[in-house]
Length: 61
Image 1 (cartoon, rainbow, N blue to C red):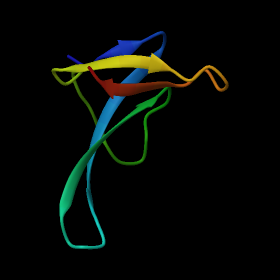
Image 2 (cartoon, rainbow, N blue to C red):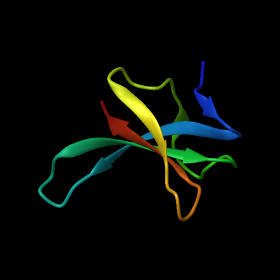
Image 3 (cartoon, rainbow, N blue to C red):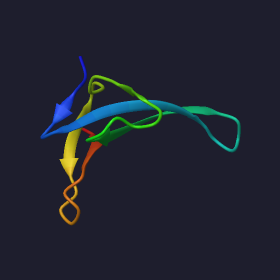
Image 4 (cartoon, one colour):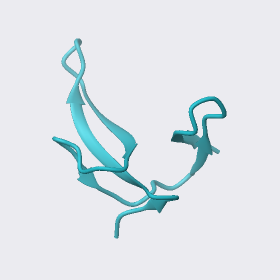
């Protein structure tokens, strides 16, 4: 089940860094992104909201 927060859906995607290492990133989107899959909220993370833009983000507890 995908995690949603006030109309925003949490997505995940694996990216390759310059050093060659793979890293999983999480991001919120209201529309379906070009790449990424809906996911559950990872353990030990909470949702914060940027005061200036109103965009949600994940932060470690």
